[in-house]
Image (tube, rainbow, N blue to C red; front, side, top):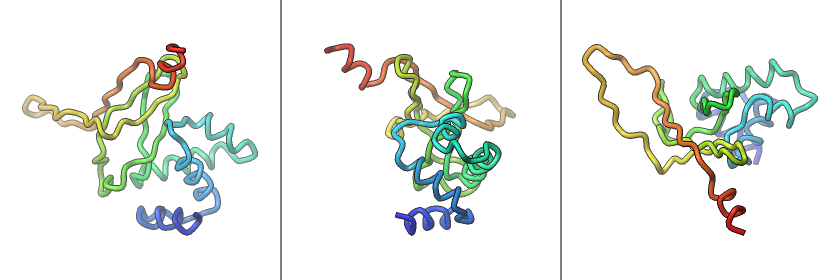
Length: 142
């Protein structure tokens, strides 16, 4: 597993430090986006600044993307493999569950093309849906 993680970091030109490998391993095991406090809870004995810098490095190198889901805490999730270059190319829907408070990437649901008026320059595009996720909906049915 470590060689696979190192290869992922190498593809993004990220030096594979011990902390970066641990954070990447944690991120790959997640089904929902995580926040810095989530990461701090997982790595209780690690320095908060190191964790924050790791997330920022991953984001700058397009390994992860940030999600503002309106919960008051920025969340982070892994990018798709084709998200390379200077800008994120994996624009997709994010879903925030109002029951379990998890934010999930839905990469098969693409963000529609947005046409802006002349002289407008798009810097970022985020599509957020809110409601009840499949797991929470099933719990309500029982």
